[in-house]
Image (cartoon, rainbow, N blue to C red):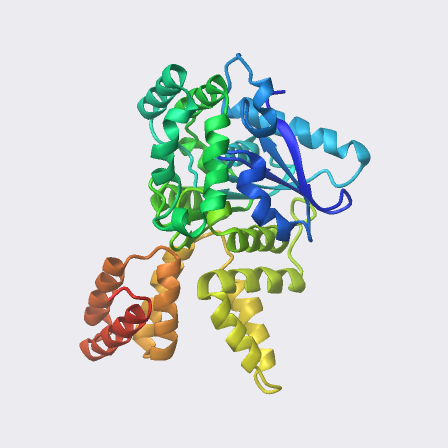
Length: 396
């Protein structure tokens, strides 16, 4: 086995959640902060790549592939099951860990209850990029990557705000075995699941960092749109290592995706409680915690049932459907709101559209289109509403 399991919290009688690492990181340095909250709901286990973290001294000299890493993760899960428990597990992984998650979804769909793929893709980089990186490490060692990785891994300002957390990750990179790192580079050079995304039926949450240069939002959008049941969330001000830069948000996304979308077995329909939980998770992801908390706190005896109705049927029944990605649903919703003249809802969904990956340029084009098909006065009012909403986001 080329990977080593690392227990990060929780109890064996809780649902199993497996967390996958990014290249050059250790499980502990990458996931510890996010795992703190997850351990309240899951038995949290991460794993280290060959030559990385707790697995540094057992670096393999044999070829490594994403398929063999996925098989080794399944072997770890089998060992954990020896004490009993569910045969299914949840998975979340960043970068190469996310690539392994997609491979697991193809190789073990009956065992995988949900997958969260962060800062990753169905293909990451290019074969030439990984060949060059492997050659550099084999000749100059992993310490030669530290300066470049500091700029590539983190969003601007993170190093200054969180020097200790950033330093721990960069030290983990420098300590990584050269051949272990290079072997994973070789694996990524051969990795390409783009043509097989349509085969993935496991529920997939794709999480992008809007400041990630290595795996941009388009890479995660391709995953969300390509699988049968995919959703995209874009984290503002986050680079390539989302579990470190936004641990609370990542923990919440992983938790709510797993608890809100997992079922007991194939063919089972969601209960009303499940639909409500799924709806609340999506509602928070799209509209933001602050908005939902305000709406919930403002509910009265008159309006409370309506709030639950919206959560269950609109967000849990429609926004969670796999037929359209969230970006498309945002575009449709904006058009409908302009046509009906619902300006307060339009402002809210302009902000939601940005969360769902719709660009300011695309919002402009949509509003121009509504001027033709909804009417110039409606579009004129909508432009004013959109400008105020974008000004509030600092995007004027």
